[in-house]
Length: 408
Image (tube, rainbow, N blue to C red; front, top):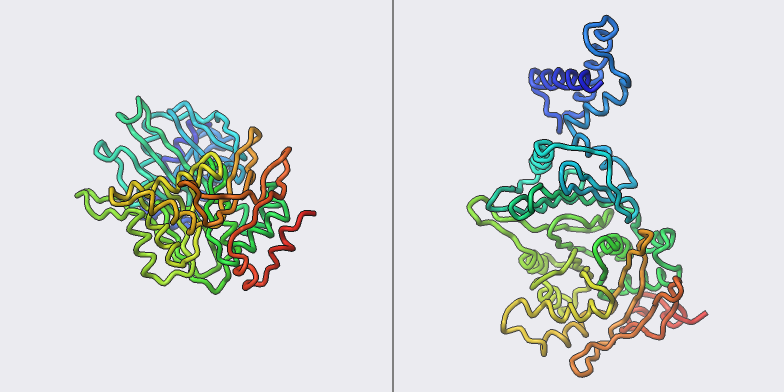
């Protein structure tokens, strides 16, 4: 069957060249061409002219994947259970399903890996060579691609494709996924709707982007939202949203647009709400300045706990320059952020909120004061002793904060 499929693929590619089809743009014509070619091939195989094909429908899909999709990786992109795909080497293709990694049976060659990466980068405008051994790009389907090549890696190309499965568009959706309780979801909805500033923390793959997307469903529909990301990940559909992403330098080394520039430009676009996909470096200072200017917002950060996230947020802005001191940053963080939502990925691969803490706005001996609003005990997310700041904002938005957080 492999020989027959290879022969048929070469015939289809020749027909595409003759007819001048663009497989990426002319999908309907491509499918028609493949169907006709498979039917003609089957007729010839019945007369003993070419090898038989065991499964015509499977062959048609394999041809479409090879020509228009990502070949042997396409079935993982089409699988709604697969969240991430990564290649450590041609014989080591992994996927993650519901947070749990597994080694697949897919075997590639070095040339196939390079061809797949070149195909994925063709529409991104990003480049990969010895002078630029890293690339971070978006695929046409919204997936995020990251590639590293030797000699930064030891031997093989390292490829990572992160899919964004929008399982939660509102915080109530997270209740059904087991990440939140009804009480915590109601509180987070009220907090975002009331204009509180939220910091979402957690480890890699703990669900930070999913949480930001869900929180976005609580933003009032009449607000103008600006999102700033290194690569497009957030999907705040159906509202007044402008999405911005960074740009790598061109072949001459110019034209780069870093995250800090995006944040500054976003402030010129009259935002009612500012969302930064993730803060890692000096852009955290620009985020603080924006929040301190009265623009509600949210962002994500890598951290091991909610309190660690606050400490890290007090440290990252210092990277902006020697003239930025902790005497300015620490009280600014205390005043700018109102809530920290920390997420965990447990041993079963389930993503859940482990704690929600509130910042009072006060600083004691250089430490931002926080209190626990919700925390996990015995696997359950329960009410803590803390209260969020700005109760007047909840009241103005029509929420009874005391009733909402009453112990039951």
